[in-house]
Structure formats: C-alpha cells, structure tokens
Image (cartoon, rainbow, N blue to C red):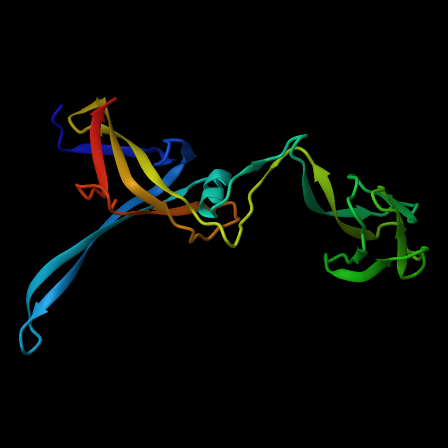
Length: 261
C-alpha cells in the first residue's frame, strides 16, 4: 500500500509503555483535541551591523497534547508520578467523610452510618444557607456546648437545646475496603516511556478502506503540569514531550506508520 493522503476519523487510544520491560503503564481511550506540535531551535548568524545573514538549525522538539473527555484516574496517577491504589479487604484505607443529619423528634442522639476510627473532636450546627452556625466540642457530658462520643462507636449524644429540623454535620474518618485512590506525593514525578497513539482514518478515494496511523514516540515523557477541571463540561488534559533518545543512533523523536486495518 502506497498511500499519501487519508481522512482522519478520530484517535482510538493512546498507550504508554515502559522502555525497561515493555509493561503497559497507562492508557487513554477518549482522546479529544489531539495536537502534535513540532518546532526547531535555531541560531542566527549576523553581520557587523546585526543583520541576520544565515540561520543554523540546532535542535528539534516535539510535543503532543490532548484531552481525555472523561476524568481518568490512571492518567491522573501517571501525571502525579503515583499509582492508582485499589482498596480491598487486604488493602483497606482510611477515608474521610462529612456526614450530615437532619434531626427528628428525638434531637438528643444520632447514629453514624460508618464506624469511625479515632476520636471525633468537633461537630457543627449548619444553617439553612449551608454555612456553619455553631461548633460543638467533645466533652465528658452533653450540655449546651459539648457532645459525648465513645471512640470507634457510631452513636453520638448531642448537645442540649437542639430541635427537630436542625442540621448537624459530623466530620470523621472510617476504614473502607472498596474504592480507589490516587495520591500526589511531593517527591514523585511522571515516568518516561514509549508512547503509541492509534489514529483511525480512511482512504480518501474509498471510505470502506480503513487505515490506521500509528504514531510512536520513542522516548516520551508525560508532564506533571495539569489543571484538573471538576465540572460536567470539563475534560482531562495531558501533555507528552517527545524527547530525543541520546543512545539512538538515528536520533528519532517520533515515527508515523500508516497501515491497513
């Protein structure tokens, strides 16, 4: 197949592999706004009065950027230089929660939905506009300013003077064995690897002729600079720097392979 032009449909996926052992590190499958920027660093030679008379090419750079249409925890972990931790019965994690209660007729006690770990030092009375009206501290007996709670128990005896319809917020932590977590550590950074982008396309003369453009970044580094957008319309951006492999005799940045399906 000798093809020169083809119509691009979409990016199917992008995958980062370890250069050490070929292990798949992370993968994205909902890539939008993909863009590959290539640039050349140059140096101008000037004459005695500063007029450029020659431009010398010094180095090439390439950078791929895109957005995953969904928030991807695997990608986020890679950007933070971390890993996605999967909770289990063997790998339980301590998870925070702010649990809210609307008091009923018995406004003297509440029962937490989870079993707390450690002490609960404060609980809060919440106004109708969701702001904090009052802070109560843990004490030895329930009174106008104090509540009582036994560590690792779900029952809380509330301060006196509360009425039905009032809202109480209880911040605490509990142990969980289902879910996932991603942590950003100050001393861990994204790993380099080999990135492969699969682009679906069609022969411009025959739409039934499907082709794939496989873009291989031989020495790729995911950057740790990212803005997470926690909105419905938000996307998950990422940027990959295409670095020259110092030990590669051909000094490749990337290769585009166009093949039949």
